[in-house]
View 1 (tube, rainbow, N blue to C red):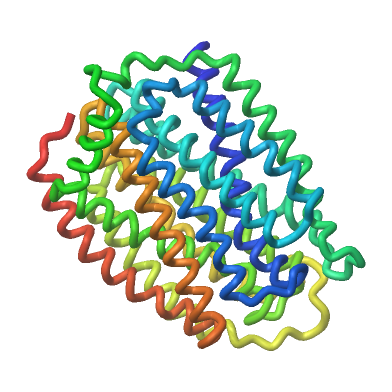
View 2 (cartoon, one colour):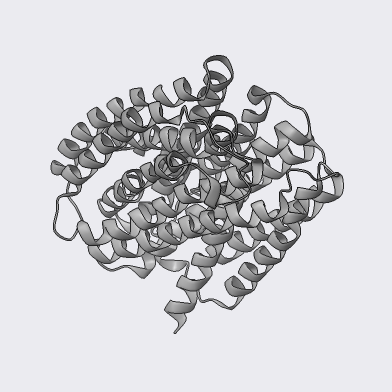
Length: 410
């Protein structure tokens, strides 16, 4: 029962942060309309979120096991609760930036803690991969729910331009619920700490880890993947609105298909990987992503006949393009699981810190590059440019597979 309570607590934490983190695309679209900012300015929201994740993960990951995972989770949840409450009260673009900075700081603490807790709850590589994929699948279900929650508060003809910010009140309530579950869960700290070293020594060990060949190839692969995912996920609402021509609320709702595809893809991957090598499977996924881009993007030059008042009125291409998430979904959790399973439990917090750092840097880079090219070249060309990191990730997967074959697994 205590194990299930712990899993439930970390799953709910991941669920609520999925809503907050993946709302950035929706918030970018709404900020352009509500606060009269450019696409390039709006894209900086990804930076406030991801760079705060990167900085906190880099400097704090090795300290978290000493402080205690439960306490760290509660600190993160309290911080983001206060930020959610303040956002609709202040209602300007600056507070939106601060909100995403708080979300980033909090998620860095949560992710390092959750990944380390998963290591405690798993005794084999198979059980670790299964639980990690489940938690990441729940993360995508949270993202899916978030699009519909935000679309409920987004009214295209609303007289009050910032009325949509009221969505952060129920989100604050959900964060409080997650905190209650954490309080009543049994989260052990002793297994993660290992031999006692100074904080500086732990930090230096994390830096040394980043110079290992296997780790360098891994973090490059993670960086490229997140660059692609955030480039598409963050700008898909704006793409739906400006390229396909959908209303704001319908654009957001249609983006939920992308999150649903990611969730389904991760759940299906857990079954497929029981019968297939992870390396060949991920190569098929990346090639399929490129094929979807090449085949479907030319079809986005559609002429919509009649008004679009709901998702039922949207053209077929608005349903098909987000299905790229099915192919994209397995890559991130599989890479993480292969990497973490090759390390001792005592190194999981430091490794997760590196994962979060390079994920954050990849997310910021993808969003800013896509946002800039979206503004300068248009939505179609911005998405075509993502074919470049897709090619690079195929190369990095090849070398990552070679490196893992030469590395001992636990």
